[in-house]
Length: 121
Image (cartoon, rainbow, N blue to C red; front, side, top):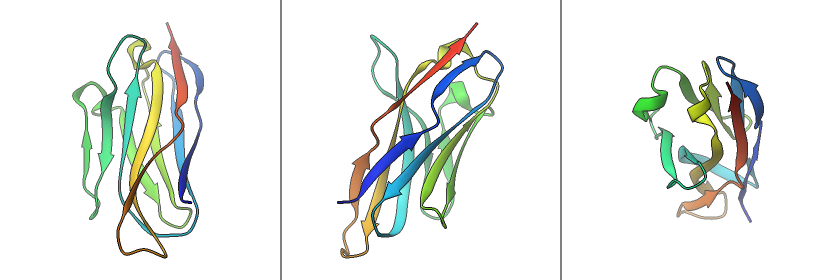
C-alpha cells in the first residue's frame, strides 16, 4: 500500500535552518497535492504550507518568507525547507498528500508519521 515516510527532524538553534522530507513509498503516477502541518503540545494541528497541482503554493502567515515547500518529481519526495527558525516553530510536523497509485484512477490521501522539530533560544 502507498505510504508517506518522513525524515529530517531534529534540534536546531534559533536562526538556524532545517529541511524536512516526505517520501512516497510505493508506485504512483503522481502527487496531486501536498501539505505540511504542525502541532505543539496543547494546541490544535495547523496548516503550514501547501503545494497544488500546477505548481501554486500557499503559506501560513507565521512562516511566509521563511519556509518553502517543494517537490522532487524524480524521487517522489516533498520537502519543507525551514530558514530563520524561531522557538515558536517548535512542533511535531506532519506531511499530507493526495496521491494517485499506478493501479488506480482515483487519488488517495495519506499522512506521514510525524517528526519532531525543536528550536532552542
